[in-house]
Length: 152
Image (cartoon, rainbow, N blue to C red; front, side):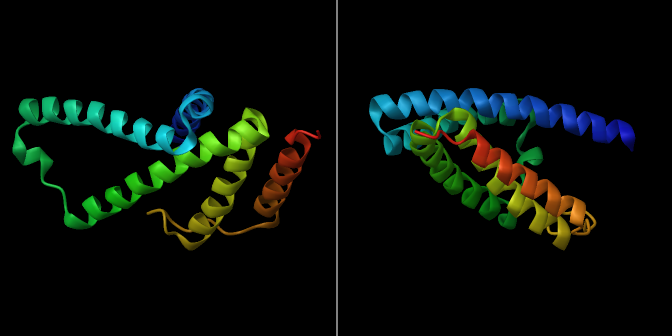
């Protein structure tokens, strides 16, 4: 179990690095072409690349491996729509708050939702109790956001 947790933490750290790089690129692109265009183009071009990868995998694996339940398709569609809002929001907010403060605030928002999901067991895992320690972690993150915000 401990190995799985460590592997998960390493994967999360690598994902965080990728998000930091993506957020920086998105913020810069948003400053050049606008936030909405950046959100739409990022998702469109990412979708085009994903489409090519899916086509390659479909040919390699055959259609039998690509039978996806309708509920999963609906979840992924909503997730994709949220992706457009997320990229647009990142482009908008990081230009104003800076990359560090902006990403810290985004992470705080993610933590708030995640605590709710964990405590209710919505994320397909056993519920993780809401403890004073977890609430304290949210508070520490909120203080970090405050300290990272530009003061000018």
